[in-house]
Length: 95
Image (cartoon, rainbow, N blue to C red; front, side, top):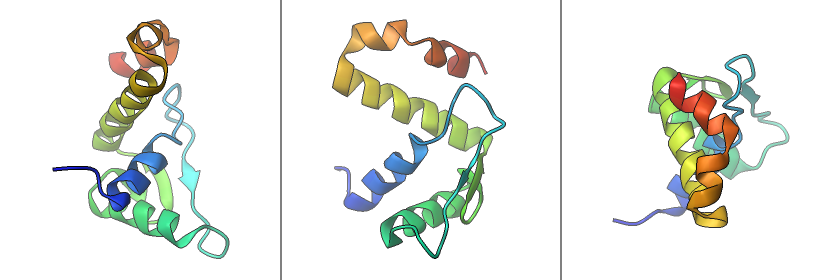
């Protein structure tokens, strides 16, 4: 199994969420957003990861997925030492 372009689009949406707070969500504007972003956000909603078809807030499952998406991106781009030192990961993992 490998990452498809659709899964990568979904991961790119998940990493846009701020894990420091649950008070910020995302709004994908259907008039101005790229069609791939709109479709990826809708798929995340269909999977129960976000609260609204156009974004909204992360669900509990979505927050877990976002934590892992952020961690994978950090690990692959900056290495394991940076992952261990990232304060927002400590906050996110304690939730």
